[in-house]
Amino acid sequence: MKKYVTDAPVLENAAISDGIYRMVLHAEKIALASQPGQFVMVMKPDDSGAFLRRPFGIADADAGAGTVTIIYRLVGKGTRAFAKMKQGELLSVEGPIGHGFTVGAGKTLLVGGGLGIAPLLFLAKSLPEKPVFLIGGRSEKEVFWKELLAPLAEKIYVTTDDGSFGTKGFTTTLLPDVLEKEQPARVVTCGPTVMMKGIAAIVRAAGLPCEVSLEKRMACGIGVCLGCTFLATSGTRKKVCVDGPVFDAKEVFA
Ligand code: FES
View 1: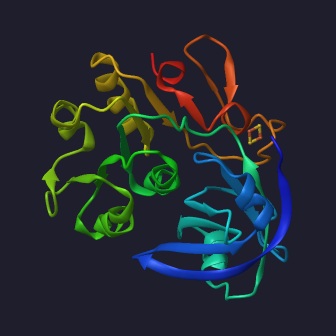
View 2: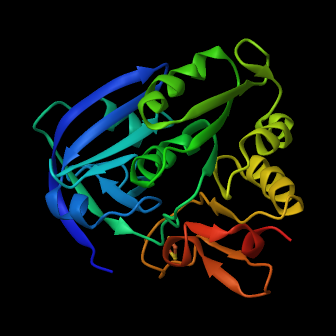
């Protein structure tokens, strides 16, 4: 799989919610090569405090426009520096990296929580049939995702922990009903591990295939540092950066 490193100009960079930013970068070759579920490693060329690249799932790649979009949360020094970047400034971007989602025919149910919804946007755009979404968040503050998903979705189900929007509870609370109503051919999930584990168990019991996208701290992104490994159900150690980040749920959760 071809991978590129490029200094990419920032085209757009703005907050889309409290502490959540969307950045569009001009990176033609990466945009052309990207598949849903893959990620990019990003670094400010003049980053004086932290030199490591940071991984971001690709929220959109537009081959025609030559753009790659990431959605990020302000969590520390690095992302605060990203948030200050203006149009035209350069970021060093490496990618696309990793093994992405299966883009197959038939109805797909996409289950996302928090920032895990970002890579599902790119997948939704790439599927032959508009998918159904089930998304979960803490409160109505995270409902901005619904607006981003609206043009890409056949239907969107929302849960919030506090019941301030949609159904009160977690995505796992609503999933059995959604499976019953929507009868999807398969399920794809991305979000907190505890959520994905619960989703995978319900989907497995329903006899449907399920893919999960894992998030781990990544230092190298090329299979060298071993910082992203986990013990797969087969008993072998897998690297999230090169073997994933997308896996069959059965490889991850027993
Ligand atoms: Fe270094 Fe995966 S991030 S091996």
